[in-house]
Length: 326
Image (cartoon, rainbow, N blue to C red; front, side, top):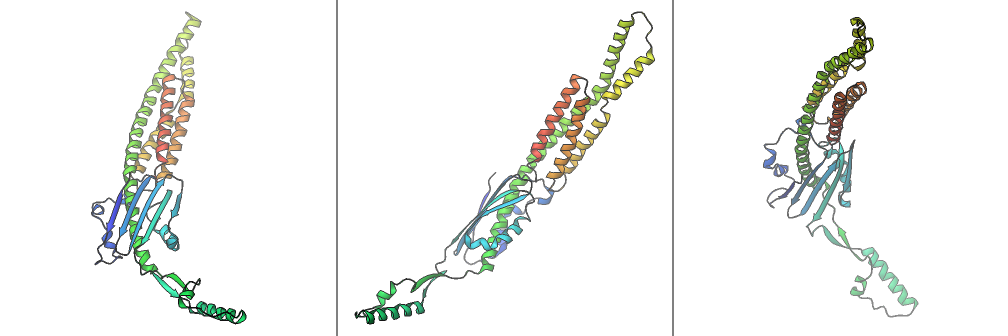
């Protein structure tokens, strides 16, 4: 999602007036720290007045850590550390590309400098050449003007405090817009994950419901097989019961389903917490996948096996979504 904002200031206002950047959209904004953020986002802000134009654009993709890459004019390179410090107030993870453009509209920033010492050296050498080679010394001012370095164009020193004030304001506005897109995308991710968790919970309940049915079917098959082998002989109920108990212990997934339900509930709780939860969610997803694998390995029934495979598939989809959460 792309958000652009251009801010123009009248000359009667101070360029450093930070209140000019408090847009109406921020008045009804949410608490950013209470929102899930995606690691993909885009933000752009621009300020223009009679002296300069500053444009900040930033975009990001998912990354394990915070990785900020900057492209900006050499004139602003001294602010790199300060820029990183500001961005860390808004970001925790993600690969961020930051682009800053700067245009100076003032002509007064450049002045002509007359280098008297260099001009004097030129005159001395011209006089020396005239005497050594018996030439007429016909040097005029116009000839001296064409000599290199006699006059040079010099850029006046910029007030770094004023420049940083301007840059910081537009940088923060771009960061706020950037975070807004991350929050919106994070909301979509949260809803999708919650929907998948509800589906997983339903499948876990199906696994639990299927477990006694598997034992009942196994007991019937066992009794029929024994009856077929012994024909009219008396079947020892205790032997059948012991065999069923051994089978039940082998395929029992009660612990796994209980833990899986607990992980699902825990993940829902984490999704309601503050930002910076991506790593925690990823850890929970790993634990969920471990339980699903155990259920699949114990399954001695096609329906249970299919349910376990479905669980693993949904967990993998959730893990893919979690990779985009800050």
